[in-house]
Image (cartoon, rainbow over all chains, first blue to last red):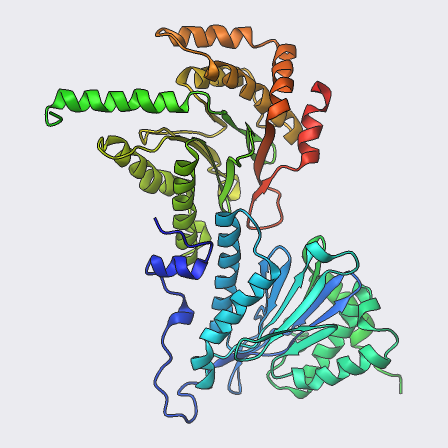
Length: 269
Length: 264
């Protein structure tokens, strides 16, 4: 029996089992992609008082077609981390699945939790291996990875990392955004954090949620591939908190309440 | 000479004696169902003995630590690959024990020129939707024994019988974790005492006698106190109410202390 040192990808190889990320990139003539690819859109994470609050819209598009209006873009990887995906869902879901199984396999085989650095590198490797696809203009994924660091949480263990297409990871002090709608909101977050009523890090869950929902609404206003709140089918963006106690989804009731109170309102004219 | 059937049987029997000798003195493991899932308990001396295999499967064993490690990795690898390839719902204890571990153990047990696994395993699985919970014990010859509510492994057959007898008088399936943990620890003492004793031929009778003798709880708690000088209680649960797909967790010190506080 081989010892895989807790590396799940090596274990899969030893069992002749492929992930979908291993599938070869198709031959390309270097022009436009051969099919209209489904893409996911706006996600953002902010460091607030108790950890990280992370939000995402629900729309998946292929070209100008809305493929799906209930896409889940915030994927729980383990008890204290979430991958927020933007880009190709096919690759992103598989990456999330590989990550989840990798971390579990490491813990189960090595009898200790994989370190945060180890988790970040695993994700880096997956993004790096996906580069040939990304270069073809299909299958690219640029995620945000948010985690609560239990070893280091005397003040606030919330940590946000974002990636580039080559797999480099960067830690962000206050917030991160990704997806086609993110260009509209990144500057707003900077403004809010620097000159707003209070910095993001001092916000409580309610305040951070209001900020995130408003920004998703703003992204939906300018980016056709991002959905805001859909009143016809009662679909809200998803919001999760990552704190010392684990991961919590904000319920639809709570989102509904916050929406009515603080997002749908505008200045009186 | 081994091509004669009688010689072969003799060799297998010798091997049986040899393995049983090696297993004697192993610290028993007790598996019990309680009101929020399944509990596995033992007392160890430094080496960890209870492991997470998959979302709903836990493993414990007595025997040679290298053998435990090899089979634990085999179980973990198989479950992990299968869970990834199709779905975590397709990883079941029955498939793991009857198609993977059982045949592997039996094969090396009967390959009399090779080395046999010196091991007894106790595995637990929390079924989906409240059905199919249960324990499976695997013997060193690859035989499989299953029970929904309780199962034990110990250093000797007599120790196991005595523990089963002790458990049959009680039912922990509706008990809290603390109560179930207390019952499991008492059962451990029953098995531990018999496991380290030399045994005679008509040992089943003796085991029953032993069980009656050990029904005195005060005395059991006293033995436990002594054993805790050198050993440490190790326990884990597959917890139905746990808010995660992954149902396994080790017991905390506080949970263990709550169970034994009155006995110390």
